[in-house]
Image 1 (spheres, rainbow, N blue to C red):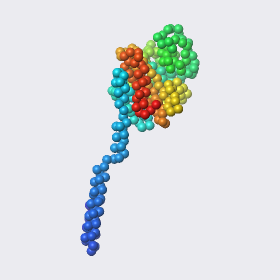
Image 2: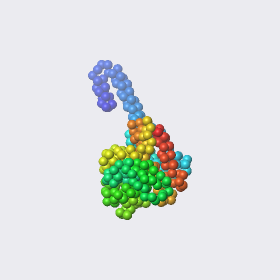
Image 3: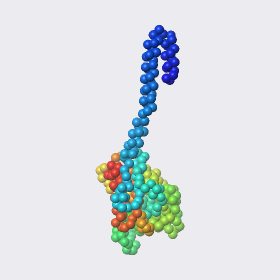
Length: 297
């Protein structure tokens, strides 16, 4: 475009008696165009540059919470509105682990969907076997058993659903590695294996539950989402489930769920190496600290 302008000025000057004046003016215009173009090319995109700067400044060091408590683990938080991930220990977030009691979310949906339990208040009778957690040594229902993480209750539900139906739902959902072992493993495959799932897969599963995009009825999913509520205030709702695997050394702790706040949803999956029983509370503590780092809760 600049070359064409220059040629036009030359031709115009030849045909006009005021050629000198127009030539000078043309040169000034041409120089201005060149100078402006160079200035524009030298400037970075304000949108992309601003976004990258903001992304750098807003990424908290989530690993400091683990270091402060002297614990090893990982955390993954997904901001659904911004389509953005915050994490600590990326390799571990892609490592498959036994889900332990976080599987109660899935197990509860299978039980309700198959009708092995009609609702969240139907009571199962305690078998009389005294267990280490006092809250487990009572008759209980689905909602209370979820809150207390009552192992025997959900083992009964799994046995009643049966190996074939459980495998069918596992395959339909694509949960973890989809392996639940043999029929004899029906009441322990999420506690001892072979079922495994990564923290990333936990978040993908929770997203589908939140959106109602799972092969369960709307009633089933809504009821389980209600059971998952741990904390509700005027400004946010926190849903989640803990898990504790004591058959490994160190023992494995989980906390998975999602936070609804400010018209947005933040999904999280936290894993922790538990060296002693007192470390269990850190699953929730680290998650809460990390969410607060993002200006939440």
